[in-house]
Image 1 (cartoon, rainbow, N blue to C red):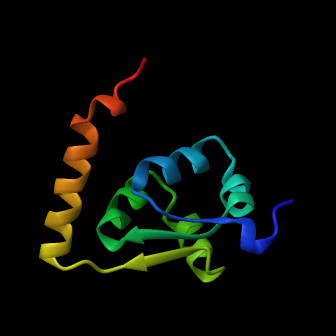
Image 2 (cartoon, rainbow, N blue to C red; image 1 turned 90 degrees about the vertical axis):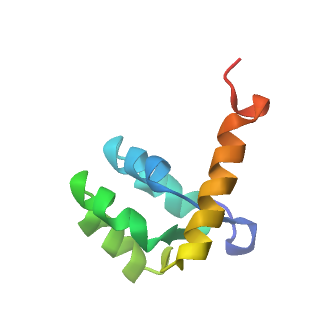
Length: 93
């Protein structure tokens, strides 16, 4: 088991979190991360995938921290995501 100071802090969109719930391995999130930061704009997708209640529980446990982003922050995040997606390093081998 990792010590709290060895755990990672991350920023995530919906994909990894939905996948953790779908495969029944939310325990791995709790094992490896001390905090997971998510934008509030992802909440509707959590609802569509039926994991909003589980996400709310993680918020109440202080594992997930929800951030309300400004339009400028959303646009900056989109630009960064596009740059990552178009990078040759993002391509499968």
